[in-house]
Structures are given as structure tokens and as C-alpha cells.
Image 1 (cartoon, one colour):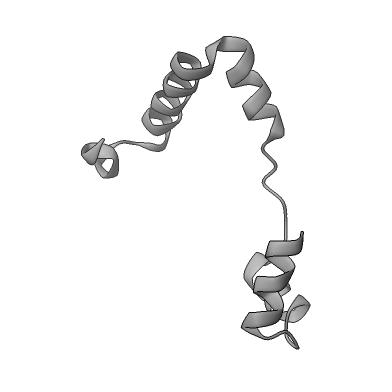
Image 2 (cartoon, helix red, strand yellow):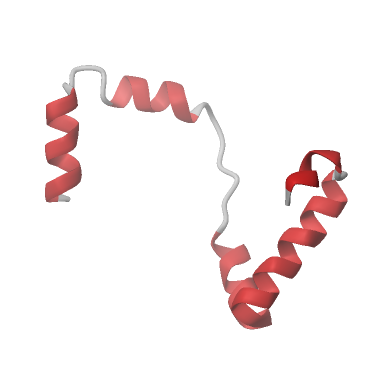
Length: 66
């Protein structure tokens, strides 16, 4: 959908809902939407603080081992 930049926010929401509904069905689309949380705060700054003393190797190991 290369014309997405030309759509209004309402049109984007409508197209997104239709894509979810088409792919997952109404029940699946609703389950997906209900999992979405906007959250609060600054995600990037929080992550910088959380991992400030970690190296790339530390983070990769954490990802691999869960």
C-alpha cells in the first residue's frame, strides 16, 4: 500500500481493521486489538537506562537464553 502516506488517520485505521479482519476474521482481529496497549513514558529512554551497563554481547546472550 504505497499510497498509505496520502491517507488520513481514519482511513489508515479503517484499512488496518479490514486487513486484520480479512486475515484473522472478526474474532481474531478483536483479540489482536485487545492485546494492544499504547503505554506511557519514553520507551527509548527507559531502555537506555535499563541496559546502560550491558554490552552488545551481554544483550545477545540474554536474547538467546531468554
